[in-house]
Length: 420
Image 1 (tube, rainbow, N blue to C red):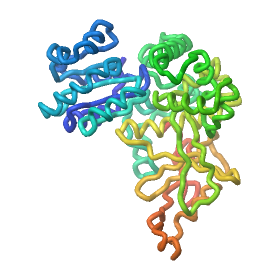
Image 2 (cartoon, one colour):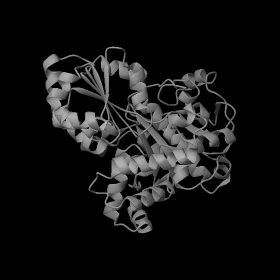
Image 3 (cartoon, rainbow, N blue to C red):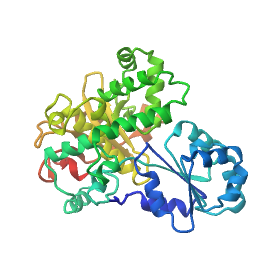
Image 4 (cartoon, one colour):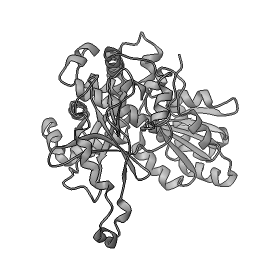
């Protein structure tokens, strides 16, 4: 069973405007499957997972491209970085859009070579696992609080109760688990971690101890939807704080977690500067934190953190699926006032609170902390050149489990999580 991906139009656009298309993302999110289905009869498909072909590409890249002429798709291109200089030469010589499709799951070294050799020649797409919309056959645009647009999607989104939501949270977003219902989920994620650590992590000089790195992943998973504290993570695993920071950056580069940065504006004071971390696959997060079923997870101490993680990952993924960088932030100040998520686009911010309940009370009470950003800048701000920082506060959202889209007050609405 194949799930049609929302990224397909983005890939076609890049194919018609750049010589090189690069699709990156974690292992097993469907990069190869998607591009193979879209490749067409004329495009050669080569995988560097094959050790013989990999050796050929590394040892004789010029002859490699005589044997496999464009248009070509090269899977796991990071295994032969020697190819990048020759891709540049061919792209500059022939100037044909869509000649090279490249995939890579180990982005640490690959993207360095891309920026060195293919700057201006490559369109880069970050791919994640299946979104809730894709699982149910829908393809929605990036999430924002456009009320008419949200109302129009109401008829398409498949209704889910809280138990069904947690079934999906527990299962995660990996296509393989939805394509074949017989796959044992626990065994799948064990295999996933083994492959990730043995093939993507082992070559990194900053990760010397694979078992400790696995324990570190578990510690991060236990703190999904919380602010990053390197000292705490380091102390739990038995490493230094700088090492914890390096390892977290590895997880970010791998597409395993997302760091949401705090929202800054000169009109706001005492903002906490630490980013907030979220696992992008809640199934992997549940496996690492050893939850045995969706039912125990829903009733457990981390139910709110997992629900928030799922909602944030769905919003984050909605932007990736449109080929856009997610414009997501959060707010927390020294008075412990928080806003779970802020979408900041076009000099307008959308505050979002995330609650597991169906009818949360006082959920928008902290939105007022943003009021100073709408005030007219005073003369000193104009003199200092900061007048352009004036920002509009758009329609706010409480994303929870109501039966319908409904207003909270004149400026904020309740929206159902499974319609993202």
